Image (cartoon, rainbow, N blue to C red; front, side, top):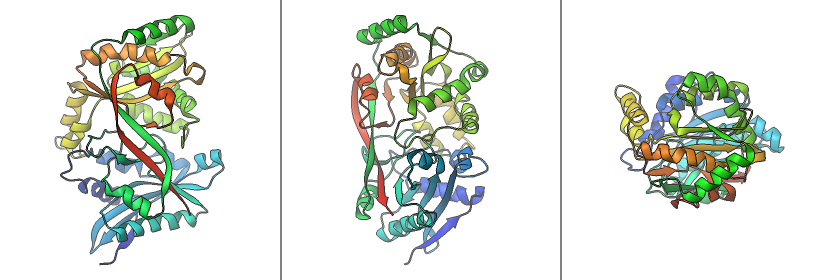
Length: 376
Protein backbone atom coordinates (compact mmCIF):
# COMPACT_ATOMS: atom_id res chain seq x y z
CA UNK A 1 0.00 0.00 0.00
CA UNK A 2 1.29 3.48 -0.81
CA UNK A 3 2.17 6.02 1.87
CA UNK A 4 0.32 9.33 2.13
CA UNK A 5 1.91 12.34 3.82
CA UNK A 6 -0.31 14.94 5.46
CA UNK A 7 0.64 18.35 6.85
CA UNK A 8 -0.57 18.68 10.42
CA UNK A 9 -2.37 21.90 11.28
CA UNK A 10 -1.19 23.54 14.55
CA UNK A 11 -4.50 22.92 16.27
CA UNK A 12 -4.99 21.13 19.57
CA UNK A 13 -7.05 18.33 18.03
CA UNK A 14 -4.65 17.51 15.18
CA UNK A 15 -1.57 17.84 17.38
CA UNK A 16 -3.10 15.62 20.03
CA UNK A 17 -3.44 12.81 17.47
CA UNK A 18 0.11 13.53 16.33
CA UNK A 19 1.45 13.22 19.89
CA UNK A 20 -0.65 10.15 20.71
CA UNK A 21 0.80 8.28 17.72
CA UNK A 22 4.26 8.70 19.25
CA UNK A 23 2.98 7.18 22.50
CA UNK A 24 0.89 4.38 20.99
CA UNK A 25 3.85 3.17 18.92
CA UNK A 26 5.60 2.10 22.13
CA UNK A 27 2.66 0.35 23.76
CA UNK A 28 3.98 -2.63 25.71
CA UNK A 29 7.59 -1.41 25.64
CA UNK A 30 9.16 -1.70 29.10
CA UNK A 31 11.65 1.18 28.70
CA UNK A 32 9.69 3.97 26.99
CA UNK A 33 8.66 6.99 29.07
CA UNK A 34 5.81 8.99 27.47
CA UNK A 35 5.65 12.78 27.57
CA UNK A 36 2.70 14.57 29.08
CA UNK A 37 0.34 14.90 26.13
CA UNK A 38 -0.86 18.42 26.96
CA UNK A 39 2.74 19.63 27.37
CA UNK A 40 3.89 18.11 24.06
CA UNK A 41 0.88 19.60 22.26
CA UNK A 42 1.64 23.03 23.73
CA UNK A 43 5.26 22.78 22.58
CA UNK A 44 4.08 22.36 18.99
CA UNK A 45 1.51 25.21 19.05
CA UNK A 46 2.66 28.66 17.88
CA UNK A 47 0.30 30.45 20.25
CA UNK A 48 1.61 28.50 23.26
CA UNK A 49 5.36 28.04 22.73
CA UNK A 50 7.38 31.31 22.78
CA UNK A 51 10.08 29.63 20.66
CA UNK A 52 7.84 30.31 17.65
CA UNK A 53 8.92 33.95 17.92
CA UNK A 54 12.14 32.89 16.17
CA UNK A 55 11.32 29.41 14.86
CA UNK A 56 9.27 28.16 11.92
CA UNK A 57 7.95 24.61 11.96
CA UNK A 58 5.75 22.16 10.10
CA UNK A 59 4.67 18.75 11.35
CA UNK A 60 3.90 15.85 9.00
CA UNK A 61 2.11 12.53 9.50
CA UNK A 62 2.49 9.45 7.33
CA UNK A 63 -0.56 7.28 6.68
CA UNK A 64 -1.08 3.91 5.06
CA UNK A 65 -4.61 2.68 4.45
CA UNK A 66 -5.79 5.66 6.55
CA UNK A 67 -3.80 4.46 9.56
CA UNK A 68 -0.97 6.62 11.02
CA UNK A 69 2.45 5.00 10.55
CA UNK A 70 4.90 7.85 11.17
CA UNK A 71 5.44 11.46 12.15
CA UNK A 72 8.11 14.16 11.91
CA UNK A 73 8.40 17.89 12.62
CA UNK A 74 10.61 20.12 10.47
CA UNK A 75 12.01 23.17 12.32
CA UNK A 76 14.06 26.23 11.38
CA UNK A 77 15.62 28.10 14.32
CA UNK A 78 16.57 31.57 13.01
CA UNK A 79 18.52 32.55 16.15
CA UNK A 80 20.86 29.56 15.91
CA UNK A 81 21.31 29.98 12.15
CA UNK A 82 22.10 33.65 12.60
CA UNK A 83 24.62 32.83 15.33
CA UNK A 84 26.36 30.11 13.29
CA UNK A 85 25.97 31.69 9.84
CA UNK A 86 24.48 28.42 8.58
CA UNK A 87 21.25 27.49 6.80
CA UNK A 88 20.43 24.42 8.82
CA UNK A 89 17.01 22.95 9.52
CA UNK A 90 16.18 20.54 12.32
CA UNK A 91 13.94 17.52 12.49
CA UNK A 92 12.36 16.37 15.72
CA UNK A 93 9.35 14.64 17.31
CA UNK A 94 10.09 11.79 14.92
CA UNK A 95 8.63 8.28 15.17
CA UNK A 96 7.89 5.62 12.59
CA UNK A 97 7.18 1.96 12.04
CA UNK A 98 10.00 -0.23 10.72
CA UNK A 99 9.26 0.35 7.04
CA UNK A 100 11.64 1.99 4.53
CA UNK A 101 8.83 3.38 2.37
CA UNK A 102 7.31 5.16 5.39
CA UNK A 103 10.63 6.52 6.63
CA UNK A 104 11.69 7.75 3.19
CA UNK A 105 8.38 9.51 2.62
CA UNK A 106 8.50 11.22 6.02
CA UNK A 107 12.04 12.52 5.64
CA UNK A 108 11.44 13.58 2.03
CA UNK A 109 8.54 15.75 3.20
CA UNK A 110 10.68 17.38 5.89
CA UNK A 111 13.72 17.83 3.61
CA UNK A 112 11.64 19.31 0.78
CA UNK A 113 10.04 21.75 3.22
CA UNK A 114 13.50 22.89 4.36
CA UNK A 115 14.90 23.18 0.83
CA UNK A 116 11.97 25.34 -0.24
CA UNK A 117 12.99 27.75 2.54
CA UNK A 118 16.64 27.93 1.52
CA UNK A 119 18.08 25.38 3.95
CA UNK A 120 21.08 23.32 2.82
CA UNK A 121 21.55 20.98 5.80
CA UNK A 122 19.29 18.95 8.10
CA UNK A 123 20.15 17.78 11.62
CA UNK A 124 18.26 15.96 14.36
CA UNK A 125 16.46 14.75 16.30
CA UNK A 126 16.46 18.20 17.89
CA UNK A 127 13.68 20.41 19.15
CA UNK A 128 13.07 24.12 18.95
CA UNK A 129 15.65 24.73 21.70
CA UNK A 130 17.74 22.73 24.18
CA UNK A 131 14.75 22.70 26.51
CA UNK A 132 13.18 20.14 24.16
CA UNK A 133 14.20 16.50 23.75
CA UNK A 134 17.12 15.79 21.44
CA UNK A 135 19.28 12.90 20.29
CA UNK A 136 18.32 9.50 18.86
CA UNK A 137 19.13 6.56 21.09
CA UNK A 138 21.92 4.36 19.67
CA UNK A 139 22.93 2.45 22.83
CA UNK A 140 20.97 1.55 25.95
CA UNK A 141 17.72 0.31 24.46
CA UNK A 142 17.13 -1.85 27.55
CA UNK A 143 17.53 1.01 30.02
CA UNK A 144 14.57 2.92 31.44
CA UNK A 145 14.35 6.37 29.88
CA UNK A 146 13.86 9.65 31.72
CA UNK A 147 11.37 12.48 31.34
CA UNK A 148 14.15 14.63 29.81
CA UNK A 149 15.21 12.19 27.09
CA UNK A 150 13.85 10.43 24.03
CA UNK A 151 13.42 6.71 23.56
CA UNK A 152 13.34 4.95 20.20
CA UNK A 153 13.45 1.44 18.83
CA UNK A 154 16.81 -0.06 17.72
CA UNK A 155 15.73 0.04 14.06
CA UNK A 156 15.74 3.85 13.98
CA UNK A 157 19.54 4.33 13.59
CA UNK A 158 19.65 1.71 10.83
CA UNK A 159 17.16 3.72 8.78
CA UNK A 160 19.17 6.91 9.32
CA UNK A 161 22.32 5.25 7.97
CA UNK A 162 20.39 3.75 5.06
CA UNK A 163 19.19 7.22 4.05
CA UNK A 164 22.74 8.61 4.06
CA UNK A 165 22.64 10.47 7.36
CA UNK A 166 25.88 10.60 9.36
CA UNK A 167 26.97 11.50 12.86
CA UNK A 168 26.76 15.17 13.78
CA UNK A 169 27.33 14.84 17.55
CA UNK A 170 26.85 12.19 20.22
CA UNK A 171 25.61 12.60 23.76
CA UNK A 172 26.26 10.11 26.56
CA UNK A 173 24.44 9.49 29.83
CA UNK A 174 25.54 8.16 33.19
CA UNK A 175 23.82 6.46 36.11
CA UNK A 176 25.46 7.12 39.46
CA UNK A 177 25.00 5.34 42.77
CA UNK A 178 24.16 7.89 45.44
CA UNK A 179 26.79 7.49 48.22
CA UNK A 180 25.83 7.19 51.88
CA UNK A 181 27.74 10.40 52.61
CA UNK A 182 29.61 13.17 50.80
CA UNK A 183 32.88 11.71 49.42
CA UNK A 184 35.68 13.10 51.60
CA UNK A 185 37.64 14.54 48.69
CA UNK A 186 34.49 16.17 47.33
CA UNK A 187 33.78 17.76 50.70
CA UNK A 188 37.36 19.03 50.98
CA UNK A 189 37.23 20.61 47.50
CA UNK A 190 33.86 22.23 48.28
CA UNK A 191 35.20 23.79 51.49
CA UNK A 192 38.33 25.12 49.77
CA UNK A 193 36.37 26.61 46.85
CA UNK A 194 33.84 28.26 49.17
CA UNK A 195 36.58 29.97 51.17
CA UNK A 196 38.78 30.88 48.21
CA UNK A 197 36.03 32.60 46.18
CA UNK A 198 33.76 33.70 49.05
CA UNK A 199 30.87 31.53 47.80
CA UNK A 200 27.95 30.10 49.72
CA UNK A 201 24.93 27.84 49.22
CA UNK A 202 21.51 29.46 48.95
CA UNK A 203 18.40 27.38 49.64
CA UNK A 204 14.71 28.23 49.40
CA UNK A 205 11.51 26.81 50.84
CA UNK A 206 9.21 29.28 49.06
CA UNK A 207 8.51 28.97 45.33
CA UNK A 208 7.33 32.57 45.24
CA UNK A 209 10.56 33.79 46.81
CA UNK A 210 12.93 31.83 44.56
CA UNK A 211 11.00 33.06 41.50
CA UNK A 212 11.16 36.67 42.67
CA UNK A 213 14.79 36.69 43.79
CA UNK A 214 16.50 34.36 41.32
CA UNK A 215 14.02 33.25 38.64
CA UNK A 216 15.37 35.40 35.83
CA UNK A 217 18.95 35.24 37.10
CA UNK A 218 18.80 31.44 37.00
CA UNK A 219 17.87 31.21 33.33
CA UNK A 220 20.18 34.08 32.39
CA UNK A 221 22.97 32.06 33.99
CA UNK A 222 21.98 29.04 31.88
CA UNK A 223 22.21 31.23 28.76
CA UNK A 224 25.67 32.40 29.79
CA UNK A 225 26.98 28.97 30.80
CA UNK A 226 25.65 27.10 27.75
CA UNK A 227 26.37 29.66 25.05
CA UNK A 228 29.22 27.66 23.50
CA UNK A 229 27.46 24.28 23.63
CA UNK A 230 26.54 22.64 20.32
CA UNK A 231 23.20 23.85 18.95
CA UNK A 232 22.33 25.96 21.99
CA UNK A 233 19.54 28.45 21.38
CA UNK A 234 19.65 31.34 23.90
CA UNK A 235 16.43 31.74 25.83
CA UNK A 236 14.50 34.95 25.20
CA UNK A 237 12.81 36.95 27.95
CA UNK A 238 9.43 35.45 27.06
CA UNK A 239 10.89 31.93 27.16
CA UNK A 240 12.48 32.64 30.53
CA UNK A 241 9.10 33.69 31.93
CA UNK A 242 7.57 30.55 30.40
CA UNK A 243 10.14 28.20 31.96
CA UNK A 244 10.14 29.94 35.35
CA UNK A 245 6.49 29.00 35.72
CA UNK A 246 6.96 25.55 34.21
CA UNK A 247 9.95 24.34 36.23
CA UNK A 248 9.96 26.34 39.44
CA UNK A 249 6.31 25.49 39.89
CA UNK A 250 6.81 21.72 40.21
CA UNK A 251 10.36 20.91 41.31
CA UNK A 252 11.11 19.94 44.90
CA UNK A 253 13.03 22.97 46.18
CA UNK A 254 15.34 21.01 48.47
CA UNK A 255 16.63 19.25 45.31
CA UNK A 256 17.78 22.63 43.97
CA UNK A 257 21.10 24.23 44.94
CA UNK A 258 22.07 27.83 44.20
CA UNK A 259 25.64 29.05 44.69
CA UNK A 260 26.05 32.79 45.23
CA UNK A 261 29.02 35.12 45.70
CA UNK A 262 29.62 37.58 48.53
CA UNK A 263 27.20 40.05 46.95
CA UNK A 264 24.45 37.45 46.62
CA UNK A 265 24.86 37.18 42.85
CA UNK A 266 24.20 33.80 41.29
CA UNK A 267 27.31 31.98 40.04
CA UNK A 268 26.08 28.37 39.78
CA UNK A 269 22.95 26.27 39.98
CA UNK A 270 22.12 22.59 40.19
CA UNK A 271 18.53 21.54 39.48
CA UNK A 272 17.34 18.01 40.10
CA UNK A 273 14.03 16.34 40.84
CA UNK A 274 12.63 12.92 41.68
CA UNK A 275 12.39 10.68 38.63
CA UNK A 276 8.95 10.82 37.03
CA UNK A 277 9.66 7.91 34.68
CA UNK A 278 7.49 5.31 36.39
CA UNK A 279 4.76 7.86 37.12
CA UNK A 280 4.62 8.93 33.48
CA UNK A 281 4.47 5.29 32.38
CA UNK A 282 1.54 4.67 34.73
CA UNK A 283 -0.22 7.81 33.52
CA UNK A 284 0.24 7.02 29.82
CA UNK A 285 1.00 10.70 29.32
CA UNK A 286 -2.43 11.76 30.60
CA UNK A 287 -3.15 13.92 33.64
CA UNK A 288 -6.72 12.68 34.02
CA UNK A 289 -8.39 10.82 35.47
CA UNK A 290 -5.55 9.40 37.61
CA UNK A 291 -2.30 10.55 35.95
CA UNK A 292 -2.01 13.61 38.20
CA UNK A 293 -1.98 11.35 41.27
CA UNK A 294 0.95 9.25 40.01
CA UNK A 295 2.94 12.41 39.22
CA UNK A 296 2.08 14.07 42.54
CA UNK A 297 3.06 10.92 44.40
CA UNK A 298 6.45 10.81 42.63
CA UNK A 299 7.20 14.50 43.23
CA UNK A 300 6.10 14.53 46.88
CA UNK A 301 6.72 10.94 47.88
CA UNK A 302 9.57 8.45 47.77
CA UNK A 303 11.26 7.21 44.59
CA UNK A 304 14.73 5.73 44.40
CA UNK A 305 16.02 7.70 41.37
CA UNK A 306 16.77 11.41 41.09
CA UNK A 307 17.12 13.12 37.70
CA UNK A 308 19.91 15.69 37.39
CA UNK A 309 18.17 18.09 35.04
CA UNK A 310 20.96 20.63 34.71
CA UNK A 311 24.10 22.08 36.25
CA UNK A 312 25.17 25.54 35.10
CA UNK A 313 28.24 27.45 36.26
CA UNK A 314 29.16 31.01 35.33
CA UNK A 315 32.03 30.84 32.78
CA UNK A 316 34.60 32.53 35.02
CA UNK A 317 33.95 29.93 37.75
CA UNK A 318 34.05 26.86 35.51
CA UNK A 319 36.75 24.21 36.15
CA UNK A 320 37.35 25.67 39.63
CA UNK A 321 35.52 23.07 41.71
CA UNK A 322 32.21 24.89 42.13
CA UNK A 323 30.36 21.72 41.08
CA UNK A 324 31.70 20.11 44.28
CA UNK A 325 29.81 22.70 46.33
CA UNK A 326 26.59 21.84 44.53
CA UNK A 327 26.82 18.11 45.19
CA UNK A 328 28.19 18.56 48.70
CA UNK A 329 24.88 20.30 49.39
CA UNK A 330 22.65 17.90 47.44
CA UNK A 331 24.04 14.50 48.45
CA UNK A 332 22.74 14.69 52.05
CA UNK A 333 19.34 15.72 50.62
CA UNK A 334 19.41 12.74 48.26
CA UNK A 335 20.25 10.38 51.13
CA UNK A 336 17.45 11.83 53.29
CA UNK A 337 14.95 11.47 50.45
CA UNK A 338 15.90 7.84 49.80
CA UNK A 339 17.40 8.30 46.34
CA UNK A 340 19.66 5.38 45.50
CA UNK A 341 20.62 6.37 41.96
CA UNK A 342 21.07 9.58 39.98
CA UNK A 343 20.58 9.99 36.23
CA UNK A 344 22.90 12.50 34.57
CA UNK A 345 20.73 12.91 31.44
CA UNK A 346 22.55 13.96 28.27
CA UNK A 347 26.11 15.31 28.11
CA UNK A 348 28.10 15.89 24.93
CA UNK A 349 30.58 13.03 24.64
CA UNK A 350 33.54 15.42 24.38
CA UNK A 351 32.60 17.47 27.45
CA UNK A 352 35.28 16.07 29.73
CA UNK A 353 34.92 18.85 32.30
CA UNK A 354 31.34 17.82 32.99
CA UNK A 355 32.15 14.12 33.06
CA UNK A 356 34.99 14.60 35.57
CA UNK A 357 32.45 15.49 38.24
CA UNK A 358 31.29 11.85 38.33
CA UNK A 359 34.74 10.38 39.02
CA UNK A 360 34.20 10.44 42.79
CA UNK A 361 31.06 8.30 42.47
CA UNK A 362 30.30 4.73 41.48
CA UNK A 363 28.90 5.18 37.98
CA UNK A 364 28.35 3.60 34.60
CA UNK A 365 27.78 5.05 31.14
CA UNK A 366 24.55 3.37 30.09
CA UNK A 367 23.07 5.28 27.17
CA UNK A 368 24.32 7.01 24.02
CA UNK A 369 22.35 9.09 21.58
CA UNK A 370 23.10 10.87 18.33
CA UNK A 371 22.18 13.90 16.28
CA UNK A 372 22.27 12.85 12.61
CA UNK A 373 22.91 15.22 9.71
CA UNK A 374 22.86 15.32 5.94
CA UNK A 375 23.45 17.98 3.31
CA UNK A 376 20.35 18.87 1.33
